[in-house]
Length: 261
Image (cartoon, rainbow, N blue to C red; front, side, top):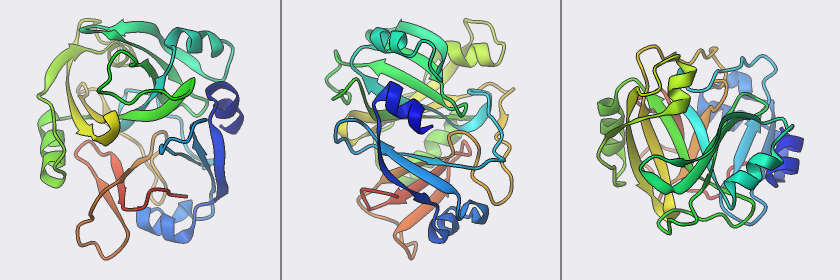
């Protein structure tokens, strides 16, 4: 993971170590304790952090076929230039650069990383409401959860957080349709949750063929396991970190700390 993200995305290592027993306990995954962990950040000093946890027995997850977190979306300066840079790299192209239908000023592509993780790289430089890339590959500005019920996902987030949630719309999503062998015109409900700094959580309603992610007891879910959010306050949980499972089966870690190693 390290050479792929440093050489091709320009990310830098900010910490190396192991998952502490206290962190594994907070996640309720005792078998993660002692696993090697690598924390990386964008080339420029943005607050996004990526954490990679090594689990030799983790299975590969095919993107867009299981419920939970499914994609990490990064700001980029030039989607087409990055696509050329990734040719022959450990990143596999899932969908080439294209303007989003209905949002022609946004240009994105989708790739699969060396651990089977799905990444979106998006040029949103013409949309000042969204976070802007400060390097060739900038910060994570959208995380994508896929669930069986849009209603349940929206109700979960509305019941816990006070962030604005957009109305649900139905749109064709090519990567979901291709992954699940659905007709190209098949539409899926989509909703966005507004976060500070031009960031978003995207909620996608997945087709009925999508299944819960196979996860071994005591281990993190394979693939995109957990997303951490900084919050201005925590419910009375008796600690500094609160872990939740959302309506899509997505694992969430809430903390008042800015940096999580």
